[in-house]
Amino acid sequence: MDSKDNGQRTAIQAFAGRPVFSCAKCAATLALQDELISKAFSGREGRAYLLHSAVNIRLGKKEERTLLTGVHTVADILCVGCGSLVGWTYLKAHEQSQRYKEGKYIIEKERITRDNAWELDS
Image (tube, rainbow, N blue to C red; front, side):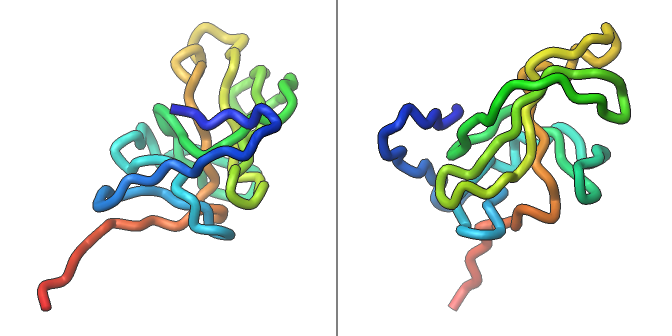
């Protein structure tokens, strides 16, 4: 479900009426709340969420990064709406116990908003 930037303008994907996580800067949808795996992760600036998938993102450069749980091959994820850094994706975990993270996404709580898509009766 990723939006890839191939040098062309990318259409922003939206999920009307569904609870989502959105970019705090431009409000582009980044993930359905149903994709949440865990809220017990740490990002660069505090708490972060681990997700199965993300949309409206483009990948930064692949790099080896030493995180709290060891060395991982990761790529930053950037919002396609405004270019803001919103987290990273795990491309490869070097320790067997961390392999469940491969292909998953971290979004930092401070860089997103939650839209619960509630409608109030008039």
